[in-house]
Length: 309
Image (cartoon, rainbow, N blue to C red):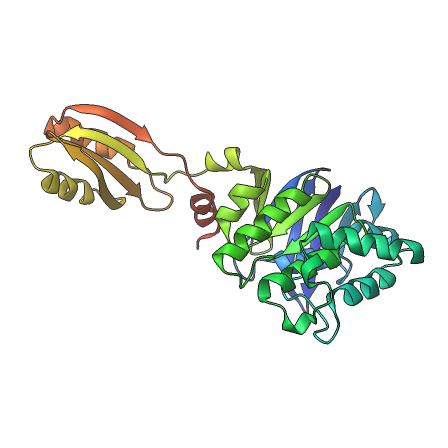
């Protein structure tokens, strides 16, 4: 659905995007991640035709972005971070207006508007002024706008920015539902959201792709995951103190203790390994051991390790 090869974008000599390449297959929900200033928004604006690339090859749904721009835009529904809405228009009126701008056929407009309002849960507010809606409903109007031309590809930039936890959950569920019919490229700073919604993630940093893979494979890139141990010690506080003295240990917490046995979570500093050092300490102190397990790295662990200075 999306094929990007050797994409560059420069502004007055500054390289915002530096020769990135990635792909998104049809039917996937892919997270597009990176710290502020990494080149995410620039890349998404290029993909949607808002910015021209300096160089590179971009194909969307089989069409060349530069030579078949109109065809590409027909395939895309774009929701920017700050959704441009007209506060003095009613929801249904606004969506019909946007459908006309996107060249939806006159007879189809009413049908498409009704369908996207149903999908996005907007029928109850269809006659309300957009300016009187809550932030959550305005985000839903933005999603409905992106969907009104029935695109094959949805590009969503921070779709849950500024929402409360209940609104985030509602929009997240909506995105998962939309993923059954559309390919989705999702940019967000809320990493647990990506873990719950996406099949794969692409991580960009300083204009370059650091990783592009399934979430399961990305978790294997991290050297610094938590280490869980269950040991029998004379004094749990003293044991915690000795583990904390290990060079690359950043934190130690007790999750359970009974009858002299204590279960500990030992967290390594980013980019560091602590298994060998803790194993040596257990042997040195002659602590009986019944669990020694490396925890699975979260997407946040992966993100920090790949993008930290």
